[in-house]
Length: 339
Image (cartoon, rainbow, N blue to C red; front, side, top):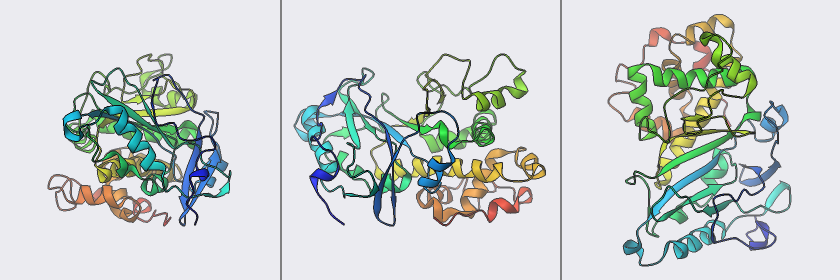
């Protein structure tokens, strides 16, 4: 495998703090058997089976990672820290194995007016395999911090084109179950690192011209929410992507990756459940979160950081009593993809 600065961008890296309105062209990236792959992104909100096949069922996730900067911790400006971080992130990026012959710049830094003295690191949509292969550790040791900053969050964009209508409905129903039942709310608060807030309201998208019981189904079929507030936990206002806004900022690499595994697990759960007989879906719908957690435990090799994080807890771990094994749907327990 080659490592060459010319492999990732044809006209040099942009290491400056860029305007918030900057929107680079988008591609989907994944890594398979150690080889990076770049695929054309779908400019559509309709389901695209070929794109799902190209990434072998791993959903591309574009991260917006908000960080603050402490000058005293590293004795350099935020601009200099960004220059070092962006350069280190891309310094050993391998050439592509297929598709295009060069990478776009995979991460840029943007100005964000909601931050006091920081930046927003914005990535190309990459699968969990690509994110784990990318040098995210380059943001550490340069005076950046996020977890202890009330201003910082992690927003993750996933393509609408990776969901059939039924899969997106299940994905939304799972989120609804997380925020409407007290014990599930506490679990999501623990996973996300924060709860309901004005910049990430725990409110579901809705379709106001249909009866409430069919609202999420209408949202899933239209890829549209009647609400105009972008600051909800699930923002559908973007034309081609769904923005998940509910994570607290974090520059701990395992912390970032475990949350991306959580999103991948929710996506896999939605795909698997969508293919089950109606009687099984009806049983799962009695408590979506209960069955989702069982799915994660049963297929933990796919989500090692997130599963370990759950298993280590007293409140939601395997011996906590949170899971009701009488509700088990066997097809979820044997649904491992073995990627």
